[in-house]
Length: 491
Ligand SMILES: [Zn+2]
Image 1: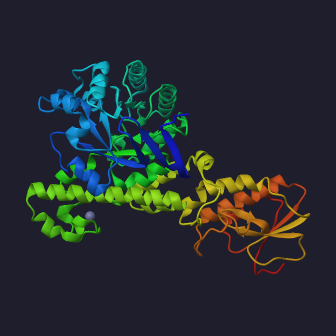
Image 2: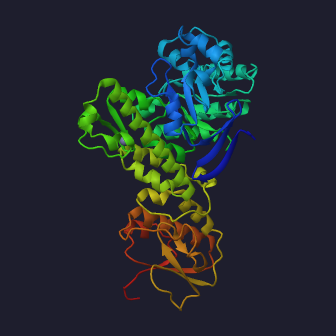
Image 3: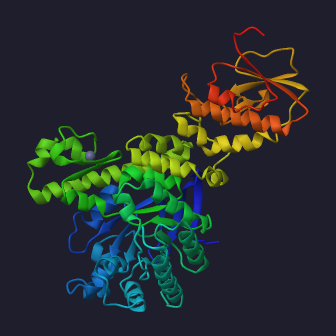
């Protein structure tokens, strides 16, 4: 058991946790956002991140500090906390990014780890090899071996109280990601960044991003804090949290601002194109897009960065509240509607409803059936499994969308997408679901699958089904032995 990470609440594979960072003497609530601080360009001062945005943790590049004539000695003599005037936790990166960009760096794994320790980093990182998506399997494997040996080497270095990242690589090969995660989890390292996924996010390849996360999660225990490395766009926070990610870092807030881009939970807008701000953060309340465009460049960039941070932190609070209320799937569903690629991401998440089901609480708020995807949620899967174990009273049972019928020993309600519901469970979660009157076909088909499970598990019972306007696709999926009647028709 990793004692630094404690889980408080969960929904799907999403969770609220507490990450204890001993060297900083702080506990960080997750899901958490780590704004990226570039020591040379402090778009927003770390002290402001703390006081205005409530930042509990940030990330900066240890390799940039190591190489900097301006900051290296100061970082060593003052320590990061004083250099940045920040009292929360500070994570440092190792130069892996520079390695992947420029092909070489002028420091060894041991040197950069000791440097991170010496400047007072609270969570340090060994030099891993970030293998990009779509890399041939052989190269991905070779690079992963190097990454794994760097993690093992990191174990033997005395880093004091500094926690260590154990990056998980493996490109877009799910089995390599799982193997990498299993190996990383088996080391004594503490935090698990899933690396080299930025090209997937930039390319709107959200389904593959979720597949990479799912593959990594398969190799990790539930007590492993997971960092989706380089993920800073608020539009995918809810989706990534629902897949089990706990930490995000944002360079996006500053990089996008420099480029005149305005983040929202539905995507990215250009300040140039906006007539209205769809936000009421302090920046958007005090400006119109026109007045903001009129500000001097440096000031405009800072204000845009502030908006980008406000929307990012607000989204993480929204995600946490959804976990508390047990409606994270409903939030993911809403966010997924913002872009077809997000729909793909949501569908990729639901492809693994079985794993989600293992973590999902038994009882939550009201289940909202919002689309065909809702029929694939883990709650539906769990109820279908449960149908096999429910006891059936009597020899003749009616499954009905309408009234009870005294000619049967018992009447169960038909409730798509779940299927048949016995009287004793009609008030239990998730069977109290709110559903639209005009249900999608997927809901009826899921209900038919539920009927099949019940009928198969009770071969000696005679079932009849009275439906209301079920589509043919659902009716043809029913077991042959069941008597089917449409309500309102003569018997
Ligand atoms: Zn705003």
